[in-house]
Length: 126
Image 1 (tube, one colour):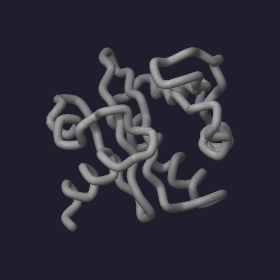
Image 2 (cartoon, helix red, strand yellow):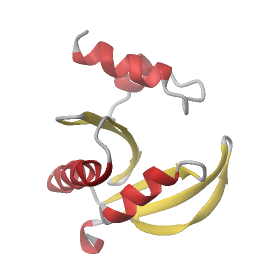
Image 3 (spheres, rainbow, N blue to C red):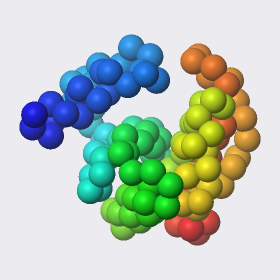
Image 4 (tube, rainbow, N blue to C red):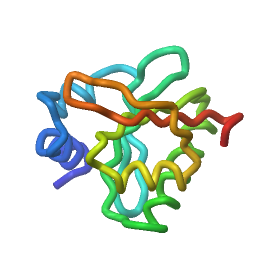
């Protein structure tokens, strides 16, 4: 499976997908795919240097933290000003990885898909 097909497949089959089509996501201007050895992250372009992160990593524990740090640093080197993560409250693993990678807890909010924990990172917080 080529990379584009893999990304589309991962988006379309993600248990947290709420109707997003992978091909449509890839076609959106400003969206970014950031690769690491054991997976990738998707960055939704929100506007004004703000991106929302979605992780598709095979790595676990310390290796996942290292991967998230690498991905985050790459985005900052390319001019991103703020990255936000909306972590479902049931996904404690992702919340811990985000915190260990330098993301800061900013609160909890309701989303159309349930309660999420909000994490932020910016170069000056990094």
